[in-house]
Image 1 (cartoon, rainbow, N blue to C red):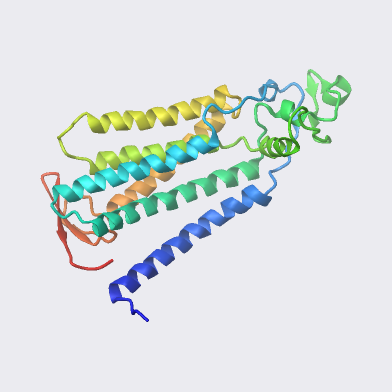
Image 2: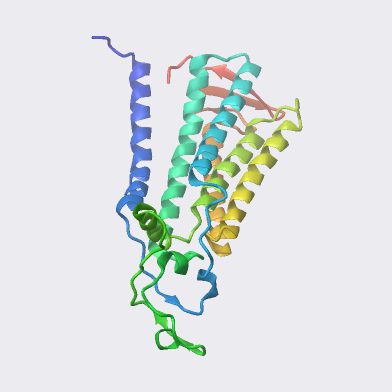
Length: 297
């Protein structure tokens, strides 16, 4: 039986702890979406904000997830590769360590962001703009039920029949989703991942070569987050304040994540020892130089 070296045992231990930490945050998100029930909120019949039609998403969930996770991974890989080659210390294992440390922290932050988002959704239970069409309540929305215009009644005793002309599974999914408006998950995830990329590029991609490449990528990231957030309003998936709150949440979580990442990786204007990359980092006149500690992860 092959015995692992001290460095390998340490690496396995660290990876295991990281996986457990991410799982602790991710599992509640999964349980909420599988078995969680949102708060059952009533409505006013004269509330025009919940009378919009149901539309398909301009940015589907699968596209949001694909871009929000693949783009940061690509950016991190390219930046870390460039930094290691610039310092003439590039090796496959070292790049893998840098990718693991950086993207692992990104994943943990994204799960925290998702947990805060889902907790808000299920706790508040705010009705989406297309609520009445998707719910199709078993009521005649007359004055006897809704109350007079100057004294509206908050309707709570009703049953949703659901939309007709769609499959049972699709009807069930829409009815479960119609009470999850605040905060916007699309806005929080896109803002988190794209702001992470923007700040990460600003801090790590400091070379003057190709000086317009960095802002071009940053503009593209910002455009994706803004477009995704705006379509949630135009597609009648969320109210404007839901999108604003979701984007703000994503920005805050990303800012905290990147701050701790940069601190751990020693990107400062003083000499520091990197905890996550196991490299000594010396910064002089804003430029970084790496020296190997010859320590296994």
